[in-house]
Image (cartoon, rainbow, N blue to C red; front, side):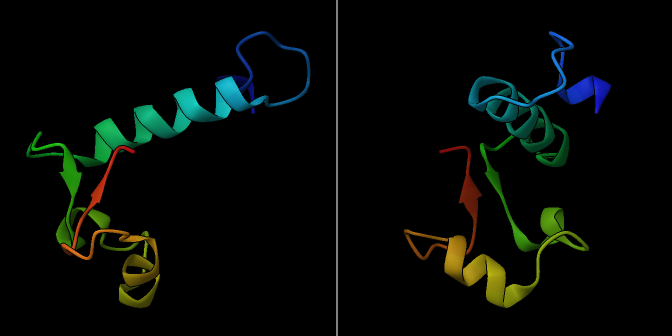
Amino acid sequence: MKALDPDNDGTMDLNEAQKAASALFDQLNRDNDGALDPKELSGRMMKAELQVADSDHDGTLDKK
């Protein structure tokens, strides 16, 4: 929790959550193409979950 709560107030606010999500995205985006494909999401997201989250239906997730 400490890594997700840099101001050490015992809570995670929206800004802290967005920073953590952005850092994880960057870590998973091994090919640095700006999108997470099924291979990069392997073990983290099932195919059905990706389909629900993939708003433009291109088979990947972008940082937005």
